[in-house]
Image (cartoon, rainbow, N blue to C red; front, side, top):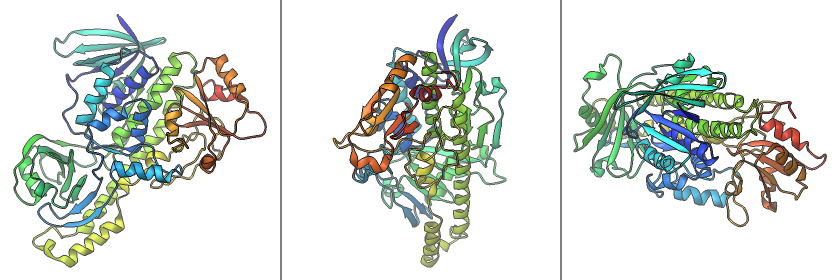
Length: 540
């Protein structure tokens, strides 16, 4: 029987990100995916700025950018009557290239290091697969389905099935990670249910090819063109597009004509080739637990959201990074018994918050539909006064679903057992505005140093102790050596950044989150701090 430290069930973006992270830390894994190839289904269209910071951390951002929409193209979101009709209001957002310049110029900790990226999952997955195919630490097996598992005291035995031949085999592992989607067999095998609302409406997706840009970009390049009739996503700003339309009560989705749906949304017939078309059902659910013992969940197996806000895959990327470094530290011996237990404590509240935010964004969409009223009926859209009224209401309702930097960057792992000296009261949270803080458990604010390099790029592989005052760090160095913890030291002379960070010392985890902060005065108990942040609890 083959044996691996970690078996990853599911080869979507989350599973492949996890395999990449484990390989970065030198941990062997096997990844199995029932499909023979990466997806051809356009399941998402934005990788947010937080995910891009994490992909950069693990050396993946440049390759991903190469398959994304060009960096000088904007993220505009436009509300229209139809493509053949009128534009009512446009929310304008910077292109990635403009975003980069803005972040460098401001450099006050309020900006992410990386801009978001417009890209389809169809394009992301081959890049992630190429990366793990090149890693000797990862055994990649597409066309092999995860069937079931048996948990044992010292590991897990999983049953796999080769899709072509039907042959079964068993693989033993120390940890099994379910990244196998919304219908997760791993979650089912654990008997873990879902909390929240399933089947939040029904939508019909039509993915198509067309070069009719005079119609499809009638008011210029936009990421989304939207109306109550549906949303059109510009997948590459050239010839690939996706329209999602609501399936109305009483409609039988199996009898809908995808070509007619696209033409009704557009407002007139035009030339296009349908690539994929199907009905689908979104959910707003979070798993009751993120695992049991040596079997854990990540990505859609642990949470499923409405696409509003784009929190689905992006939440899963955060799961993969959090879980990846903790698995690596545990398997390499310096992670304590409480380290993996902190995974659910940290990530499940984030998923619940993102689920609720997605629901709020959908409520705004419903308010927008009400604001349209009967504008799309008969000749009503020809009335310029009525169009102006709707446009003003759209501006008032806003577009928070694409502006929530607080959701993306501002969460704090409150109550985490591996955060030393964390906040004793709830940290004030604004879903829209990211407010930089060095509260333990928060993401380290991103800045650029005097020499122009990004602070994030100066962080070490595992933990990094940042020192702004030239302190004696030997207690931390000695404690890390005793515990065999890879600790990097980064001493900085950056007086202009004092107001951003506010403290003399920051201990930063591999996922950019702050594990501990300290200032002058009494020497910190370095051994106790490292013990806490690596999951050893009261053990010294």
